[in-house]
Image (tube, rainbow, N blue to C red; front, side, top):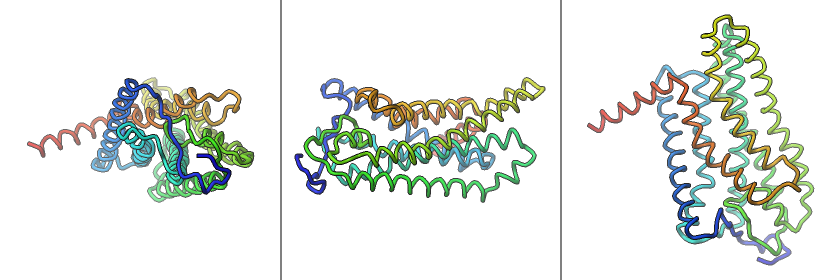
Length: 313
């Protein structure tokens, strides 16, 4: 759509991941399988935690919130991708594009904050075990999660409003499978310096501060584990953090590669591949990563499945 006025732009075209019909069919199947695995896996985690009283602890409270966010995160992009493949349509309205971008910002921030909160929870549990029950009360946990939602919502609203003020003229083709901020800024014919400045300053603070908190938490956790005289005790302490650390590395690695590298090294192909990792693959892997090495959670999942089988019979 060619225009010098933002109000005339009514839609964008999402190119997706491929234009080849055979590749599109394969991608449709892969995205469908990954989305179903994401929803099923994370919902099972939420149900297992909510139905097992042994898991009503701060760590699992935060994990159930992370699972909920991951379901929402995938649901922001994948259903639209699947619908586009089925309907053979690439169009997304201007308002729909901004709405999708808002929820992507919001849910990315929530993932970011929850990972930091979970690291702090492990820090208190391992480094200050005697004060754990008094420091990590239910009220504190609820306030941490609620504060994360409020901050994430305000940050997402800020960047969405900054994007809404821009004008788009000429090309309306987004070489991506969802409305991400980087390709949208490239399409704008307005001055995008304020948007870029806010991403590299305020946005960086929002992303980097929790990341630094995670690093500091793990420095203290590692020191505490190394001082444990019992090898078995040290392994047990680290096993509760290993899954979380794996998710942190995968999440932050892709985020930094896409959003905090110089624009000169960006390419549509690399950005798309990296965003598939953190928007589709990471939410799918989280339930497996957190349950594989967690006996309590695996036990709760077995109880949930056996209870379901019994009710069916």
